[in-house]
Length: 186
Image (cartoon, rainbow, N blue to C red):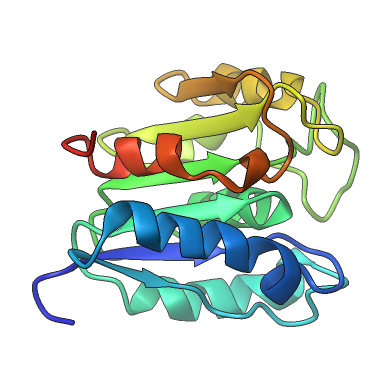
């Protein structure tokens, strides 16, 4: 698809997450954005037992295939691992945006977990010129909405989007996310 903007969507973790849960988010994003966007949706290895050790290399391969102006989107633990991988080794291309959806914050004030723990200088490791958007449903019962504020604390330029009445899957509506990716969309 030449002339299209690339979107790399990283799934969340858990049994069936790729096909049963996050496919709905990807389908919604494709519908909202239209044909001017190429939404790539790779299956992460061992989705039922996500780990930075297994997903990191797969993410780096996917990031290496992106061109300048691509947008990376991570849902749930996929967002946590994505931002961790970006902080560890930024891609060679210039990203248009980093979008985290219902991403648990692992570290001080958030969830414990040494493998997923985000660096305390996370913001300093991300490209300052790249907009970061953090979406969180206020009815999320899996990753508490407070986690969005924890991301904003370590990434000071991050824009937090708190969505009333929306759950961990944003009620399968990607309209708010699409508006950030394509500001001209109604």
